[in-house]
Length: 173
Image (cartoon, rainbow, N blue to C red; front, side, top):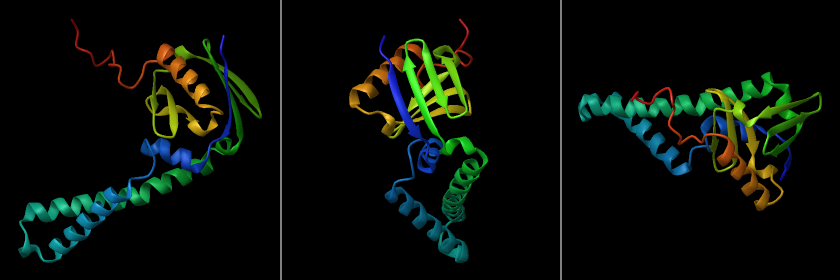
């Protein structure tokens, strides 16, 4: 039986990437949204220069960017301070039967069946126990590409992926 052993410390960057599902917004998209917001404010000030729907659309897009730019970092900082375990060393062992999570104060074995689904982002694996509760595994924790592939194979065989249809939402026959 193949066992993948990972040792890591979850960083604030990992936590932000988990919240935003893949890391910070690319700079081009961010620049376009900022420009849209500035145009929206400009149109709002000179409301006779553009149709009202365009003014409010630009203003709404710009406002949502500001909210995201402020709320995501605040949320990450709050979660980071709230959960002292995020800054501790973690060892994780994955095999056909499940995960063994070893932390400084405790050990826990979790069967693959305890996970509802999993997602893979550019930098992370997220294993969901519930809709908003997940185990965060940074890809930098894998020593080799082969270990990463073995772990991905375990997930593909043992845990439904994000693309799998939700049986609750499937139509009845």
